[in-house]
Amino acid sequence: MRSASVAAGFVLVALLLSPGAFAQDDTAITGEATLRALFNEQTFYGHTSEGSAWAEYYRGDGKSAYREGDCVTPGEWRVSENGACFAYPTFEGGEIACYRLFRDGDQIDFVPDEGGDSDADFLAESIKPGNPEQLPMSMTGSCGS
Image (cartoon, rainbow, N blue to C red):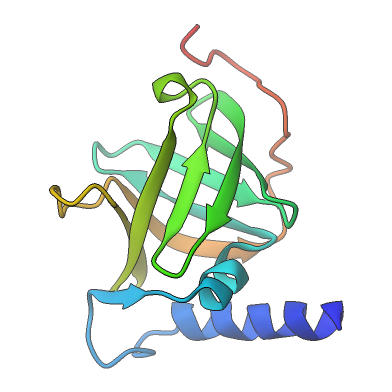
């Protein structure tokens, strides 16, 4: 059963990353099963709205690791019908940050689910299966302390 869901996840990711997979850009990515398959055991690569490169690995048990610069921060992720939420103890006092996801050409935009700002905070340009960067689930580097 697990291998079937993993295979379905890889198919879904391949579909989401294929040019022309959607008829138009700015298409919301919704549905708990769709979002779980998109994130589960994947590493996203992209940049922030300020231009900083980042990578984030999403382990199947809801743990995650976010890297920006030399800093790797452990955290947690979860999905709902409408988006994804993340909690990182060293960011914003550990508050949970939720995002709606949108397909924008070949990238995925993470737009804060706060009802006001419609600009993406994070832009994911590629997704690779597993944890190819070997991002640790513990704090490393200089993480703003």
